[in-house]
Image (cartoon, rainbow, N blue to C red; front, side, top):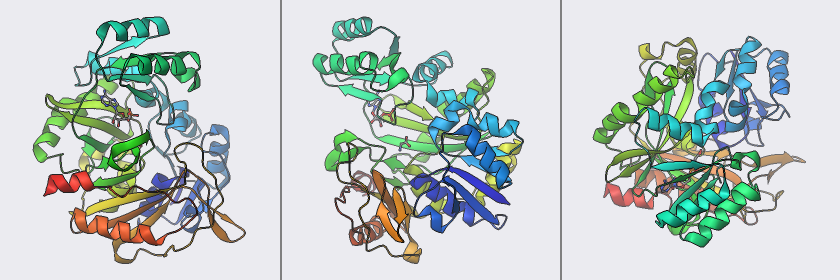
Length: 425
Ligand code: AMP
Ligand code: GLY
């Protein structure tokens, strides 16, 4: 079987390493991929958002299966185009991907089907949004751009001035373009956050093992929001009891709601949850594997991922039993100096040990091979990942490998998993 993976970050590298384990797979292709992915798959210089070019590539290489990993091509309907051209795919179609593509859509869906989430109001007019926040006078206030915003569309305003500035940037300066035509203003929730990725064929939902992301750039959850600076799995706050509650009140109702709305979701649905005093609530849905959640979840998967992709495609997921290892997994992201703001690229990388010795694997997120040398080429450069018999062991191994890798400006958090470790002990 020839599998094409669309995307080129750490998440895609983790998917490709897992796909490579399948005895059914003879060849893996990736577009555009990156420096590290090129050791595991044949990379083609085709943009992950260029739907006609991806369909053409799938034809050219005679792909048997195409996995679309990033949010933007999913929301734009790449899966629909691939299916129309006769390809088997993993990933939701455009109608279903709206669950991530529009926060207004997902909030209204949750309200309609009684799925627990933060209370909210939608605005298409900046003055009305501002007047509402002023009258409510409850801070922090959470302001979200409706559409995709590279993971940066959420503003937690501590006071009225910050709220006004945020609304202005999103709705008038249009820093996220058309994504800011509408905004959601919602209640600020508190509690531990949990990421749960789930396989679903639209009828049945099989959650993967849980994880915890670390979104802020700096230690102690300080600094700007990023795509994610590190992850651990399992998330110790996510007990079996909470998992059962989430299944009953959130996961199944969401799958059923999407089906009822004529937007059957097939693929990986990401539930971003907050465990509040009043029970688990949905912070956000993503229509895809999380990054860097995938890097700590997939190493624990024991079942052939191709069997899962095919079961989702054929809508026979309920017949498949999915097995997970009991080990813990930790991922430490090494980022370029300046990320998530502007950063320089092209720095030579040293200290990288090849292979998967001792349960350590280095997923490449932003690397390129230039003149035979591996150099940095993105904000997040590596996800240094390790399995261990417990979280402490996984973290020790990941940090010891992370310390050895060097490039100019290398920046990483030293406290990935610290909160999770406290919760375990
Ligand atoms: P998102 O891009 O939707 O994942 O939001 C980024 C981060 O903002 C989340 O991981 C939360 O930490 C925070 N956040 C989003 N919505 C809320 C909320 N209603 N209350 C508190 N924090 C939130
Ligand atoms: N790590 C969060 C996300 O993938 O959106």
